[in-house]
Image (cartoon, rainbow, N blue to C red; front, side, top):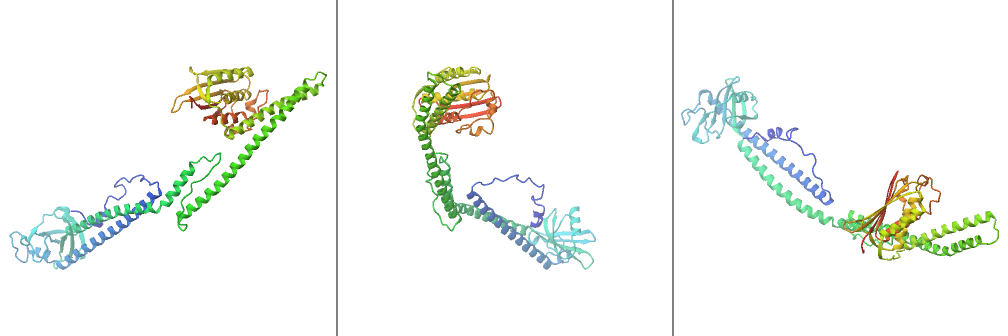
Amino acid sequence: MRAGLRERLARGPLRRGAGRWPTRLPRPYTLRARLTAGLVVLLAVSCAAVGVAAVVELNGFLTGRLDQQLRETGERFPASLEHGGTRPSDHDGDDGDTRRQTVGTFGARLVGDTVTNAAVVGSSTGAGAQNVPLAAADRRTLAAVPADGAGHTIDLSALDDYRVMAVQGRDGDVLVTGLPTEPVEATVHRLELVAAVVFGAALAVAGFAGAMWVRWSLRPLSRVAATATKVSRLPLSSGEVGLWPRAPEADPRSEVGRVADAFNTMLGHVEEALTKRHASEERLRSFAADASHELRTPVASIRGHAELALLHPGPVPQKVARALERIEAEAARMGEMVDDLLLLARLDAGRPLERLPVDLTRLVLDAVTDAQAAGPGHRWTLELSEEPVTVTGDAHRLHQVLANLLANARLHTPVGTAITISLESEESEEPTAVLTVHDDGPGVAMDVQPRVFERFTHGDRRRTEGVQSGTGTGLGLSIVAAVAEAHGGSVTLESAPASTTFTVRLPAGDG
């Protein structure tokens, strides 16, 4: 038999140290799950509050009824134990007046702190009062019950839980009357079971219905999220951009409707800005292409006239000859820059390149041979795979990629730098040709690395220390990146002091 509800709650497993609390509960990630979980938790708390209140109130009401019944019973039964029963019982050996006593009624008489008699009404009307064997702990418990005429719950080893009331007798003794709490506990347990079943079913139904309701209510927001996902997958970095996805319109009076309207307005502004950017880029590309094309003729004319003046048979002053040589050299440099700008403009415009099988191994051999002749002071090392590496593309442009990378390594590193060129075929989901150009020079400055493939980017003096020639126009690596992308490949840089590596990846095979 368990103790009363208040006592059970007082010594229940919720005390600190009675059990291990979970360190962290799993958190729902979606808004729908959070709202549903919140509704279920609030409903569970409400159901628990109602259940606890009902159980506590019912337990108090039934306990009060027991106390009232004890007051009505009074001290008649325990008082009759003083003389072994004032009226004869139906069975020999039974003590106490059991008439009008409820089955299970307990009676005890105490003189001082000593229990002189203790009996309980039997389980049937004719059973009479039966003596109760009390342990020492039971006697101490009975002696501790205050004679205040109020009900108290005690636990007797032979009878389990009882509700008892102690009053002063006429002879200066203490008369204790008790009734079992089993009917009260059984009723309370029944209510607990019914409440648990009903509230559990209500939580399950409410959870399912709440999930469906939240899902239906958040459908417009789900459509906004789906539209945002589509927009996030659009290529916005370059080219003509059309943000055609739009979130479906919803009630503007609701929060979701305002979000959808603001999102569509933002997409409109972004699309307008990207359209203006694309138009500006197209005008700039057209200007660069037209200017490069138009400059080729006057630059060639200037160079031709400078060469013609240098071929004059008559005597030419030394300063004039030097000026003509510089005009010829700068005209040649300007011609190369014009050609590079024209190439970049064509690549930006998406001009198709040749798509023919190219023996990349032979291109590497030719480019390294030319680089050795141009930079004999550097230490050149070539690492090639046993089998030739073939790609599909434009042989002239790929040769330009190799020449620019090797020229960059030669021009921007001091004499004596070791430069290693390797080429291999990488077998993965798609065959890839991997070309790397590595040098042990001073490296590329950290602030330059993020924009090294942008146009007109120049390195600092540390990388050009000991180099007698100029550092170029700043378009070589831009052409490398543009040509690699036009072939469906990529180029990357990894640089640190004494270790700089450019890696070009190109689709291998017939592509």
